[in-house]
Image (cartoon, rainbow, N blue to C red; front, side):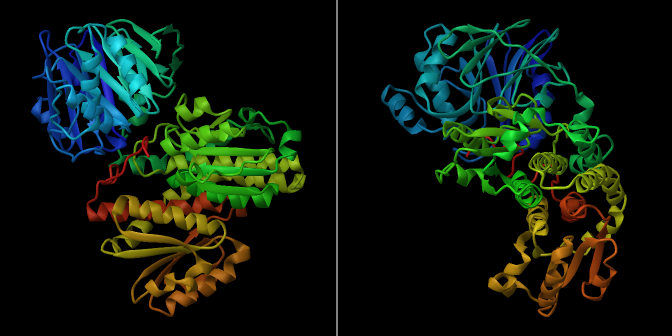
Length: 608
């Protein structure tokens, strides 16, 4: 949520800041603004709405001169999304400008204190409290004032700060909200995420909690909250700027769906050595794997759905009990984590606030925590005991597609590794599973090649008011993800249900013409789900069945059928999700929705 970009160097700042903000639009926002020092004073331009409005106000930055600047795309939390509440925010003398991601939890107490000291506030935001508090502590030394504020405020924040009487610097701070720093011959940069500055540098510094950054024209310095200078090593980013371009596709989401075969292949190839699964990051010996008592999987949204699939797979394949929790509930229910348990947290961004806190809480309880993330150097990656990266590359569209597919692969590999160590699969079965795993990229490619058929079907349901997804076992986890994809980007009400639960309430919602998508990829549950299809058909539903090639008998029961290639029973989600992603995409396009940036959503949820 929200996006920060800052620059100081030998080039005009405003166009660089605006360009960086454009790369962060996927994070979700409802207003935008920039602050640039023109050699005399700090000029702020900000507006509600899309970044395009800000670009028009500044003529793409040409009317806002200067070589030092910060910018922001805001997701409204405190105060309505309007011009006044948009960032950057000034102190009363307009000599200090601040942009902020996160939430200040004790801002009302601080604001009351400042009002009693004679301060006046123009906005409803918690961010303006920050800049006024910096002003309160500022006696000519920016670093001293910033660290005093850090000791005073509670909550999460990433800050970009400019001082009119220190125009040779941009300051930045981080606590529980992502922030990266870049350096090149053209200057120094701060950003909420790597894509914003990848055009200018691939040498990135990942900022840790409660660190302060001081940017100069050709140098970067790092300090602790106690103002002690610290040394940091940069990370070289391998993927380039082209990876975050649309590459000729109309939307990032379609591009990223087509990148799934590559993401799947690269993720499993990183962990194969012949017929051996190599997960060095796990840091568990075979003896320790055999001694595992339980696995806790913790995640949010799409990653949570990958975790539900993993529960079925790990329990069946490796015979280890698995609990799956949404991170926002896990962190508050005081879970019992016994000795011999492994906690696996999953996050595309590696910055998901609830998942990060669940990780920290688990570590406090003495748990061994493994992270599955897509972003190298992210907070979750750094704080976990071990990390397994998904090699999906940058995912820009808010609705996750290729990151989900790569998460599934990572979880398959863990299940296979555990099953091998625990001797719960025979050598022959293991080789068959591995053979089917290697076929997945080509099978996904085949399904993507048939997208026109999905498009024609989706066009019939552009006006749908409510759609239901049902399935059993792994197909239940698939139904949850298919439903989420549809509601995320098309705003059509949809629900994913365990098919066996229909009679316990949901079937009352089925009426003439209601679309029900029924998944039947699990052979042992096929006949049971056919019975559920007949139940909804009897009440007027139109049924689309999603099943394995060879089950042509389903055409006698369902109204429309989509077939997926035959694969191992554990891997059907990797194939069956493709038609559901495409269906959601084409319904959204047909409705004229902003597919890559759906309303009210953000790519990286860095606040509760």
